[in-house]
Length: 447
Image 1: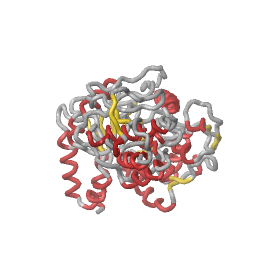
Image 2 (image 1 turned 90 degrees about the vertical axis):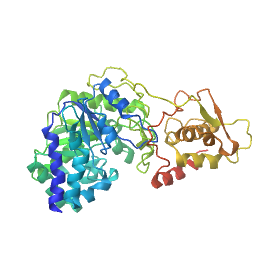
Image 3 (image 1 turned 90 degrees about the horizontal axis):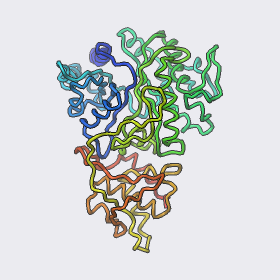
Image 4 (image 1 turned 180 degrees about the horizontal axis):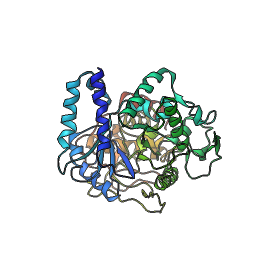
């Protein structure tokens, strides 16, 4: 057991032997009903000058697309594989051979390897999940420490990482502090200097990102590894699914954050440049909504690679839109909407529930982009999301005779009715049980 675990973490050291690109990276997840082909995503990254990407698995088709591109790739070991690989040294070697070594040839993939050790529900954001005293309404960074129930494990882990010159990955989401605590000061979630600062041992904090990261650094100090390298594995801001999840606030967060990274200023406790991965590149319409409906809207780009707001990855805060994905193939321009010729709406609610259990209706919840639609509009949105998710099949727009297809785009100034992209063959047929349960509670009361 010890040998296998040590081998897995030795893989972590591989990352420091590669040519580490400086600057911003992005996370690219694939929990979508329709995924863009890897070749299109690779070109999207290159067009926007992004040469660092972090994946959540090691899918061969995806990884191969990065060969010869110069893009630095962080691979993930799926959570379902961690225990098996930790228990069996030979299985761990085989996994590395099949998923890493095969891509390491002249002109191959520039791989970094960072195993995922926790589920999303426990790792986002890492400071609140692994540390104590991160709520700055009642504490300051210097009060922080690892939770008592995992203290021994975390101390052993960070000391092992330090002894092997390997980094600690942390996810920091100021948005979640705002989402979970309605009394949280809005300005403190951003990095534009507008918040009322707090003081901690002579250091000034005017944003949650710095405070969260320095809480971790204080914890590392107390664990005896004050200089352990830290990589921010995820940070970002969603654009839908909650009152504070919208493109305007996302732009505000990224403007301040990217300017900070470009300056190389670091945090009050650890000045200097840092390595970060933005979350995320694209929206994922099949992510669990257990944490919140915003979970499906973290993308800087829509599901089809279309940018949502102006963002300057250089940190110069120029109001320019990033380059959109090229070569995207869409389904025909057909929409499924409520048939207004049907006057009896008694079956509408049941059909909306059915559609929203199997497709993404998160834009309809209170405070989201489509919550101002009238009753017919909300029904039509639900119908269309189901219709697009199931590839515009004829059967997907029946709804007991309530649905009909139209050519005219029913989108409004605030609510976008999508046309789905042609699938790469990895479409998920239904959301998870957790997502289904959460959907029921919300969409039964939509109309």
